[in-house]
Length: 247
Image (cartoon, rainbow, N blue to C red):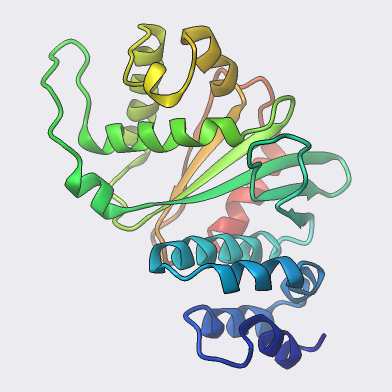
């Protein structure tokens, strides 16, 4: 379908929050247009089923991520690939040239989640920041969607980015240490049987990327590489991935 036909099909010719950004992305990228053509039925169904503002913003971040990844000609995408598992899988299967295959899960973190969270108990031995606690919950909620025997990237878009490279690293180290102590707020609360079960899933997370909800110059994606990952992302692929998301 041509761009105008795609837009009419996706939005039924009606005003929609995502219509303007979608039109912009389609007009500026043939590869993104081909991607939308391939998955137009699935995307139309999601647009029709998604009514709540927060879910629409989640979907916007997913589609914008696809648009950004496809700026790199060496990357190709499959949207919501079938996994054969009963639980929901990652948003994208990404292929780098023909040699490397990895998964990308995209999620949004709400500023309100940080503002409304209950105060943390003071622990002088194992200090925990509010932002770190929120991030830990976000990561733990997504571990079950990461596929075994695959490289898995988790991309989080935050409304009010307050994390720095150092604070991101500290938050993930704190999460790991709490799991090692079999902290119930990390292990049992997130549905894991025990510490070993948690790390079985945690080792599927290859990298964590954090970005703002709207691309702005001077606000690059920050990342953390999981030293325990069983399937790390090769360095040359990481360079391409970061370049696409920092466009």
